[in-house]
Structures are given as C-alpha cells and as structure tokens.
Image (cartoon, rainbow, N blue to C red):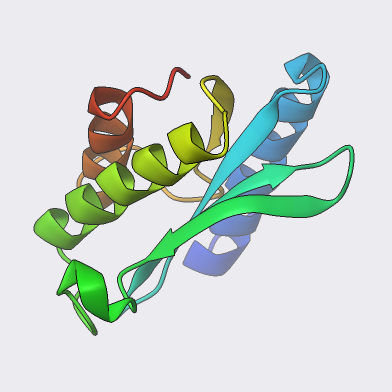
Length: 119
C-alpha cells in the first residue's frame, strides 16, 4: 500500500497515462509538468516520438519567469493553444500526469480550451 506522497503520485501518473494510451488512437498528448517554481506543457506525438509544440512559464515573453501561480498557468495554457493552432492541431488528450485536476492544472486546461484546443 502506498503511504507517502511520492508513491501516490507515481501510481496516479501510471494510471492516467495508461488510460490515455488505451484510447489515444494516434491523437496527440498534451502533457503537463508542474514544479515548485514553474509550469511546463508539451504537445507530444507519441507515434512519431516528437514534440509538436511547447510552452513554459520560463519564457520571458509570457512575463511570468519563475512564477508558478494560477495566472501563469492560464497564460501558459493560452500560449500552448495558440502554438497548437499554428501547428494545425485541434484535438488532443490532456495528460495531467500525477497532478490533481484543480488549481493551476485546471486553470491551464481551461485556458487551453478557451484558446481552441479540444480534449
């Protein structure tokens, strides 16, 4: 039985990733990573093994370098939606990893949906 945060996180991540792989059928994956200081997102084509688009709070043009808050997450979500449209992507799967879907992760997902991504 998992009894510490890291083990629970890893179990959640594997469970989420396996569910996505079961129904992916060639669609791209929007993968989110959140650290204590930044939030990063990638649009990944698992069939080819390439990253199609990426956005991060580390980018100076977003104006949130070194910030990991809800506003930064929303800005990163809008940026990834814009870059996905430029790459010709409209649909993907949202891979939250082991992170719970609330707060910053939810703000990023909502901003990406408002920007035109469907998942």
